[in-house]
Amino acid sequence: MQAIWSAVVIGPSGDDDLDPQRRSDPTAPAVGGGAPARDAQTQRLPFVREAQRALRDLGYHPGPIDGTFGPQTRAALEKYQMSEKLSVTGQLDAETMERLDVYRRLFRPARDL
Image (tube, rainbow, N blue to C red; front, side, top):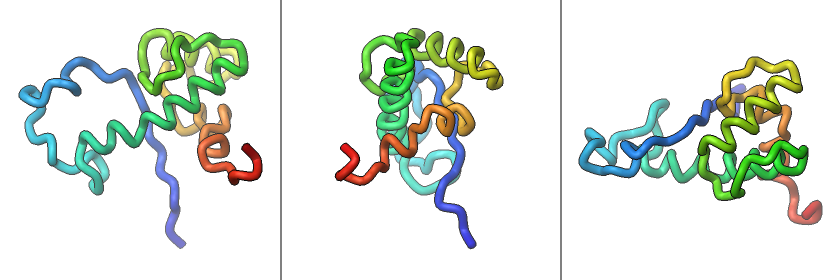
């Protein structure tokens, strides 16, 4: 049987991600293959946005709910990880995403909305 999910660590994106001249090949597959690097970045936005919503709902103040992994989101994530006795990485790792119910929030049936 083949797994459908894979763990992803989502961190802050720097200005290098936005400057196509600094990128060696913007059409090269992302780590793990599959989509181009630019597509991989936009595919992560919903996960960050849902994590931001979850953190906000729990009272951790991640800043604007915009899908951008900035310093406010990182600080809120670190506070959440510390309070939940998770490894304090400041990253949106698989365990933290599971605890925040990011997948369930993203993929819930329409009738649950």
